[in-house]
Image (cartoon, rainbow, N blue to C red; front, side, top):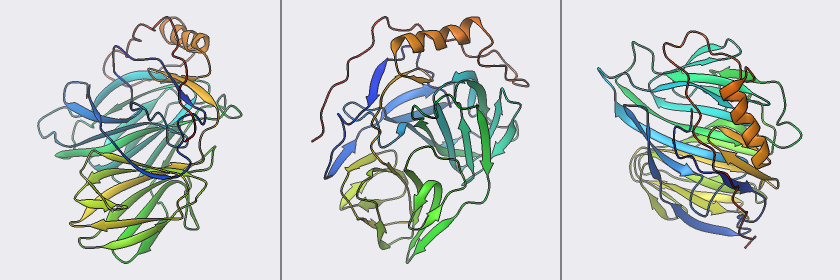
Length: 321
């Protein structure tokens, strides 16, 4: 999914300046962003004061939207660099096309994982014949220096491992959790999991104390470490936890995101992650003036133009606390 913001801000993320080295309960308020004509997303990352969670650098939650008789998601071809995109659905379908020639329909609780590496472009759209409701999350993972120029590739996994307990089923999206490992390729110590809680369930999820974590509420009414959460909100949890108490008043859906704090400072703008303002400028030129990002064939429409790039990069702030 693209960042369609025509006033896209340039931001410095990563490093340990924003990491909280102890357990906290920091509720993040989403920013509402229009994505095309019929889809509005709630943007949780980057957020004011909270830029990343481990290598997770971008989180959008959307729906459930009633798109019966509507075009649904329509994201024209656009570029990516230095990151992985994770497509995750609870309802509906998304048709993925990319400049490698990939063409896949992603369905609920299937992993669509695109590694941009040095350069890729793709589009995302609801199929012409689609389900009534569209509900999901789109996430980006920053690639570390050693792997950010890898050859681009796309993975689609329809079968993913699960971890279960009384009233809890956790589907592992990326990384490792409680001895299970996702088939998706990960380049940093990371975890992403979809949590389904039954009404009145109480559970404790094992965590790695070296990771920082956050939980995104997708549906229902649940408490995370005693904090009530509504759909579309995200709770940052800091580091130092060995387990996470969960409780549900109704059937509820959550997403657990975590990983080792991302030590490198990155520069994120529009759909690019780099290491300097100059590198971002070069990527923008590559999209507007060259064939660096390839061509998405089969999409019915024009590709997405790049917004204007701010002239000066932001300076990093913050410290470990």
